[in-house]
Length: 382
Image 1: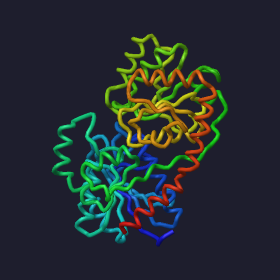
Image 2 (image 1 turned 120 degrees about the vertical axis):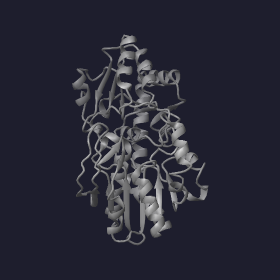
Image 3 (image 1 turned 180 degrees about the horizontal axis):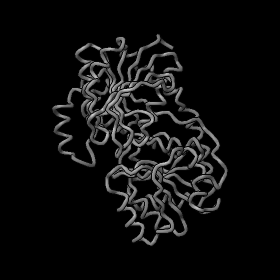
Image 4 (image 1 turned 45 degrees about the vertical axis):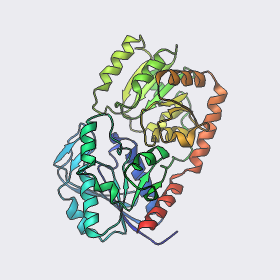
């Protein structure tokens, strides 16, 4: 290991704000392992906790996984765009860091931090967390802002970090290839989930053998959930559990109407958020991640660690790691999704084979391994 570094994470939201999806667990996993390697990690973030919850205007400090986390008072917010007026002052009050890790894009926190780093000669690495390419909503406005207000954030970073080849290609439209480093996200350690019927099947009133497809993550547009409901609705006798917080896109009522129109009211369940999703994967015969765009896809990594086979689209970054080892990878679309689900549900041997392969990938790409890669990246720019 190289010298001990002082690393500052600056993020638009941080643990325990799990309503914002996989990036929260990614940042926490990195911080835990980096402090375990002896580095000092300070985290500056907002007080955002969820889409529909009012953030606190008061600042506070907590020790989490060896890192010092400063939650800065957030008087204004839009979704996970939180305005923290004290951010610049807090950055200046810290001992001068060796490197700053800017997480997120098109928000107050990343923009202010990148500007502070440039003015003070502090190197920073930029990780967009899958937000770099404009998509879904207000695409034209995002493109206009990317060329003006946010232009310098990626362009002036010492290095930009991509979690996958998919994200690297997106970044390459703006950042020179030699200034992009691919660092995959870590996988949880392989583990044995509770025996069936576990907590999810018990909640749904299912026995241990009823075919069950599970989707874990935010209920949001771009996740392919409409296609998943149709695909499962056409597979006789198959149950679907969609587990995760509503992202405020208005998608939940659409999915319920679609379910009812397909006559699958007793087989498609929208369960909302849960506290411990890792307990659910053992109840799933298949995890489905049919997204139109995922820079990585942490839920597939979690399922792999549990030995649960997945169906992923080739638009998910994690598919590069799990293809034919822990998952069937399909093109984005309703028909390929349905076909892959039907194939896996009908083949116990294939599911078991992919389950074993997924655990092998999880063992190879532990958070400790990934944190060492991240530390090497910091060394390059510090």
